[in-house]
Length: 303
Ligand code: G1P
Image (cartoon, rainbow, N blue to C red; front, top):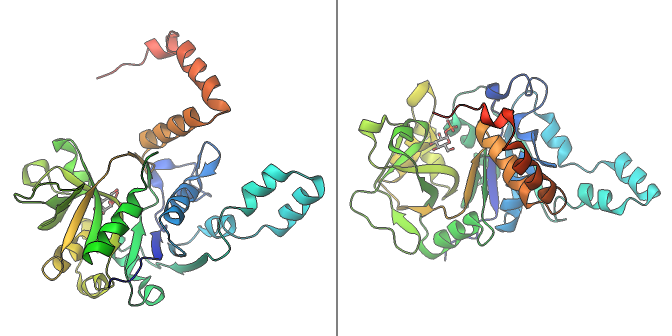
């Protein structure tokens, strides 16, 4: 019987230099997509997949994340007194009562693998999820993490979320070697992982996106992982070495993935979720129609 996945690690120590000056005093995870910070989308996705305990691996200047998930007593008191019930719900209903949050610091920027390792003592000896908060994953019809957890509970294997990327983009991702395996029931067996290979060296175009379900045995591999790509301790290298001992599956992403660590992906996410919003969606649709005939639109040069 496999243990239920109920804990998740969210590495949030990254500096967000691609968003300067916005991220000079604000964590990149707190940048808003419509009316919620990016991190809240990711936490909500994890909650919907059954996660009850969160380990945030943080760094300096990230206390706004802690504050965001805390109970703002003064604000609650004021909203109650003024009878602002909708606003009250927006600040008090972020987390169910039984949710537990832990914060630990990475200390030094030694890579994603090193960040995840910091959560070892809080996770203990049970399977867990990892969600990279740069990625917002969204699908109306299914929760990808929940499906990955199903694959873990049926097989006991490790699972990563994956999607096809253009060949010339492989050097931005961890890439899966699938050899001759076929996709079955939305999943494919992995035979190797390579961090950010050049297109000519990439074993496939199946990129690892920001969701993982691991057995606790990944920590033994992380403990021994030497610096790899970019001189950092890479999660991908620990996965590749665990693969010698345990099975890994890639679960194929069906929905949307917005790379909010990148200005373009961040704008895409804002546009997508704003269009889905019942209040501003119709106005935004009209505005897009108007602006698409204007000079500012016509003057955009496409490659
Ligand atoms: C990280 C991982 C990489 C993965 C990517 C997904 O890279 O190291 O394997 O494919 O996230 O977004 P980063 O984007 O932090 O450079």
